[in-house]
Every structure is written in structure tokens, then in C-alpha cells.
Length: 223
Image (cartoon, rainbow, N blue to C red; front, side):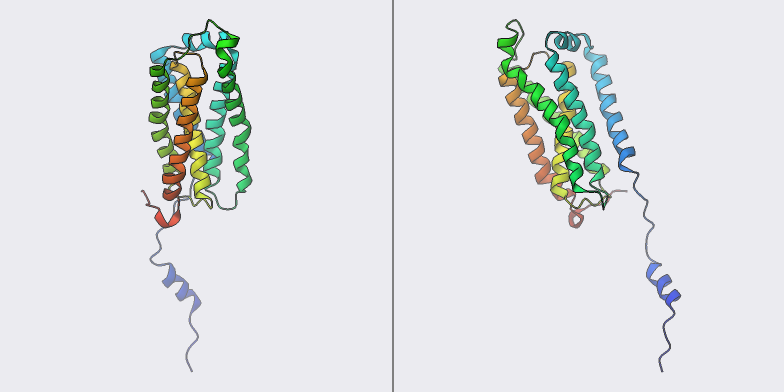
């Protein structure tokens, strides 16, 4: 009669070749790191350009300040939501938390379409200036998106495409809030259309590329 297997020996044999896994920091702590990076970039831009031009624009058009506040909140909340979705068991409904600040950002920015009627003396963006805004948002959104994907490199979001889209929204919002520091023009329809195009491109690129990178089957482990 065969001897019954030794369960303890079996457990030790199965676990002998397993490498220890370093636990991820809580999403809130990683979101704080994301917020500190945005703050550091904002401080560098403020040091280079100064805050006086931005504050002058805000005094003349308070809706620009509300739009900037909405962009900052969208970046911060969106970053935290994306990192939270990488934790199994977190409800997908958390994704809706990014909606209120995004609506504030979009709604206050939309007032810029009436800028020439509300404040005829404001300086509106030229075609070249609006294109520069597009390039700024795209240029900053790429490394910011890459950072959030890197922070999620050892996580396993159950909705990788949704998570990647929120990463794109948070990165685009962060870039738009940084742009406000060095933006030389008041928002108008053409400028806002290119801003919307930039955000759409960033979110779409993240959905296509970031969603693939966040899928466990395609994950490349780093460190």
C-alpha cells in the first residue's frame, strides 16, 4: 500500500522556487508621489515664467481660474482612481469620481468660447499659439502617462483599457494645468478646440497602447 504523501513536504517543495513578492504601496501613497511630481513641474514653470501673467489673466477672466482648478483636481483624482483600479477588489464605480472635476474643467473652459463677446479686449490665441498649446499638452502628457503606467507595472487592473483611459485623462489634465502657468492667451474657441483635440489624442493613445501594457499577459516586469 502506497504511503500517504507528506503534506508539509509537498508545500515546501511547491514553494521552494517561488520568489518573494514586494507588496505594492497603497494607491493613496503612490498618488501622493504623482501629485508631488506635478507640483515640482509647476514650481519649475512658475520659477521660469513667474505667476504674475497667470494671475492677471485670472483676475480678468475668473472662469480661467475655475478651469485650472478643475484641471488640477481631474489630474489628482484621476491619478488616484487609476492607481486604485489596479488593486483587485476595488469597485469599478470609483471611475465615476473623476467625472465632477472633469465637468468643472470642461464647463469652465467652455466659457472661453464666448471670450470675445464677454471681454472684447482680451488677447486671443493665434493659430501658431494654439498649435503650441497642442504640442505642449502632448509633450507633457507622454511622460506623465508613462509614469502612471510604470506605477501600475506590478498591479493587475481588471479593466486595463478603462484604467488606461483614466491615465490619459489625468495626464492630459495635468498637462493642461501646467500649461496655464505659461499660457500667453485667453481661451477662445480655436484654442479650446485644439485643447480638446490634444486631450482626445492622449486618452485615445492611452486606450490603445496603455491598455495593452496593463494587460497581465503582455506585462513586462520591471525591477
